Amino acid sequence: MFMKFQEELFCSQKYKASKYHEEGVKKIYKVVAHGRETPFYEVSLDIVETKAICTCHLFEFVGIICRHILAVFVKKSLVHFLPSHYILERWTINAKKHIVHDISSDVVQVEPQVSSTMMRNSLMLQFLEVAEVGSQSEKQYKHLGQTLRKVHEELLAMQDVHDVDDLESPDNTTLNNQVLSNLSITLRDPPHVPSKGRPKALRQKHPKEKQLTKKRKCSICKETGHVRTNCPTHKHSRDVANTNLTPHWESVHQQQSQTERKAEERRSEEAEERRLEERRSEEAEERRLEERRSEEGVKEAEER
Image (cartoon, rainbow, N blue to C red; front, side):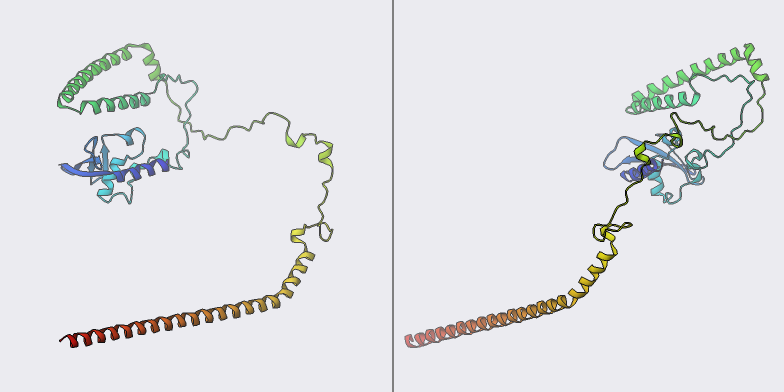
């Protein structure tokens, strides 16, 4: 459930909300995706009670606040603390901690095949699709409004007839005389039912399973209780070898450092020689240029 809410929160960043109408304390926002003009959703926000209603009705259907309301909350800086009425109890860890009141067995429970909640949700989904089509033009909008008013009147008439039939039916009197018991029974875990098959404790073992396992021996000292990777004898000999090799490695390191130092000195000397050579070549070039200028000056003087 948290992942679904997180997805709605992330998707709210793709929408922008702009206020275009105000009715007292309620403000109506137009929410639309960035770079698009349709489809758009209307969010009615009550600042006093911090309640918002969106035309997508996701919160009414599923119980999760939609991305359009979250976009408005982000605009009004209300997303840092979500109001408590948007956190339904059925999504919390306390949803199963309430005591369930049992109904007496002598009461006849008459349940329809399809619950009213399922029928309402199915109709709301169909209404949403019809509303999307009906809002595309003014002609479709007027036709849908007239049709809905006509269907509403017919449903009210059917409801009145249904109430009269219920009052005249004999079963209604019987159901009204039934009294629900107020006894509260705490639900407990069901009794444990053993699984099929023989229990592991009673299983007959194979003779090979009863044989003692062979202990592993160390391949170095031939003793049990350890292997060659953690053999104390091998570890001691390895430590002694490392101790003996320490002076050798120190001398090798000193020789390497001296060699590197000599190589560095040689490289610096070569670099200095290259710089001197470059300076000499530059001075020779300057002398040649001066001699050429002086010769050109003498020629010009003779020509005059």
